[in-house]
Image (cartoon, rainbow over the protein chains, first blue to last red):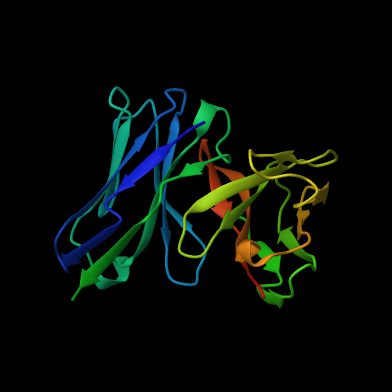
Amino acid sequence: GENVEQHPSTLSVQEGDSAVIKCTYSDSASNYFPWYKQELGKRPQLIIDIRSNVGEKKDQRIAVTLNKTAKHFSLHITETQPEDSAVYFCASNAGGTSYGKLTFGQGTILTVHP
Amino acid sequence: SAVISQKPSRDICQRGTSLTIQCQVDSQVTMMFWYRQQPGQSLTLIATANQGSEATYESGFVIDKFPISRPNLTFSTLTVSNMSPEDSSIYLCSVTERLATNEKLFFGSGTQLSVL
């Protein structure tokens, strides 16, 4: 089955710096790659996603890049703020047939220091 | 996006008992899914809740342990049967919704289960 590896497991940055989280996947049929943010005690929230027909997508301070050949995708957060502190999960849809059947990475704990 | 509510939000249960978690969506949705998040871990798909038919389980999950009902397009239940401490997790109901031209997965409020 699909395997999604996420790095780093923890990331600590100063406010205003950029943060980058990287994921690799194994199933070449995967065609949808969302990112979720989970604050302590809350549900995971979708923050950005990308489909395999696109190489990059931006939404304000957040961007995601996809390299299909290398089977990796990355989340970039610029001008980080303390409220960006959370656990971030990448995911992919193994088999490429459903947008709800996702395989998640192990998560990255991001801490933004004021 | 749809509002996805779960009940209970948390519970503490005794080993060997069962708990049924309810998931209510404020609009009709085609696809509903149940995920598990073990303490400090990532999310794992348990099953797809199919309306009017048996749920489709992922590898490692079986109907006897996690029976699922989906009587209509807005409601589903997940039962955690014969619980053990290893079942202590957050259980998340989720649905896919089409926003603009794309389908996306959204999560419910979650049920935090502790088994003693």
